[in-house]
Length: 99
Image (cartoon, rainbow, N blue to C red; front, side, top):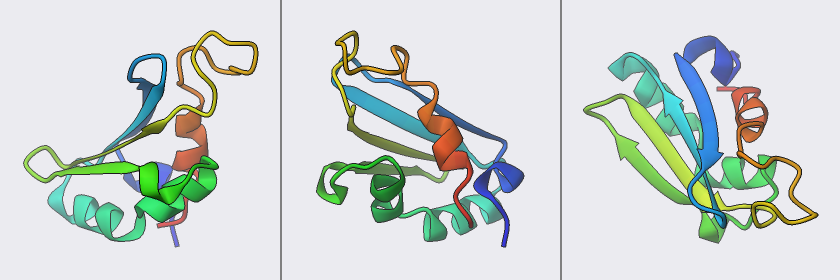
C-alpha cells in the first residue's frame, strides 16, 4: 500500500475564508485520480482532520484529475485556538493516508 503523497502530484490545503478549509489532491493521471477517489473518502478525511463526516463537501473534477474536499476549520482563522493561520499544515496529515 502506498501513501497518498507517493502517488499524487501534490496535496495542498488552504483557507477557504476564515471558517472553511479546502484540501486539493492533484493526481496527474486518470488512473491515479480513480485510485484516489476510491480510497480517499469523506469519512477518512473527516477522521484524520477530526471533523464530522456530514460536513465534508467533496468535489471530483475528473477533467483536471483533482479531488477537492472542503470542511469547516477546526478553529476560526485568527482566534487563539487557531494553530495554522493559513490552513496549510493540514495537507501533511492528508498526505500520509494509505491509498
